[in-house]
Image 1 (cartoon, rainbow, N blue to C red):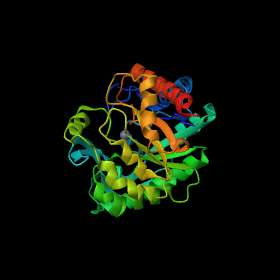
Image 2 (image 1 turned 60 degrees about the vertical axis):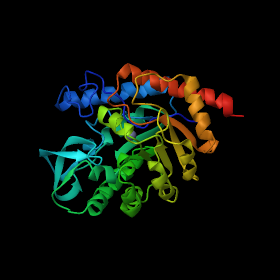
Image 3 (image 1 turned 90 degrees about the horizontal axis):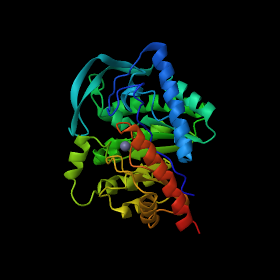
Image 4 (image 1 turned 90 degrees about the vertical axis):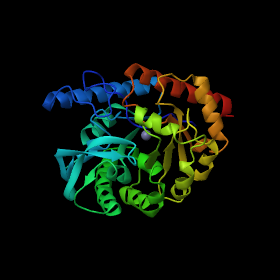
Length: 340
Ligand code: ZN
């Protein structure tokens, strides 16, 4: 009960890449970089286990960014000529690559880190992939001319990599869809269809992560405009409850999301964000257990997985470690409090 897990990303050590950045530059290249990525993956596996997480991840140590890490393995994308584009409905600008032709995977995307992690942990292993709608919102289209059509093309590639990850022994494959919280109407029109294409035929556990973004300034400012109650989830959870996805990862701690919206996810596992990634203040186990207690009013005990609100990539490494420890200790406290 209350198996603690994480949204996915963890900070990269200073010897691997620039720290405290969403699009950090690598510190080495070639074989040296390959080895450094592997070392960082193993380091974080150990730290997640020591903290007490039940479901661990590779910490996304092998990808520069959660979307572009996938796109680098796709043919038909021009990475040489990136363009500036407003993303998440123009919340912030990013330098994005351009889709210039038919999309095709060049080969495996996350094979090395998935197999390495699988070989070095007995715990359940989660690997994350960007969701189709979020990819479409993080790349410039010069070829398809239709968001839904391009999303379906990406979903086919995601499905191909997801099947391979499943064969590598991955237990949970999660699709990160922060764009679901921005383009709520499109979620029901084509977002869920694209997600279904991405999970087609998988027998492992499937998850979708929908948050209010990393703790970067642009997101913190955006949240200030959302009012007293953030009700974005209300528009998309009914469709997700009716979908074939197994788990939904959402933001809860330190946010203005009304807890009762979790009741809209009946029948799904709910990964409740009990750790705020937009604040460097480390939660106490008591606070984590309190948040779990609030969620328990609306989520069945056996379906509740304490989790982080979002990825921790841009955070300070030592703070991220302490937050993982608070997460696991809080889950343990919640088992004592609410386990009977
Ligand atoms: Zn997130």
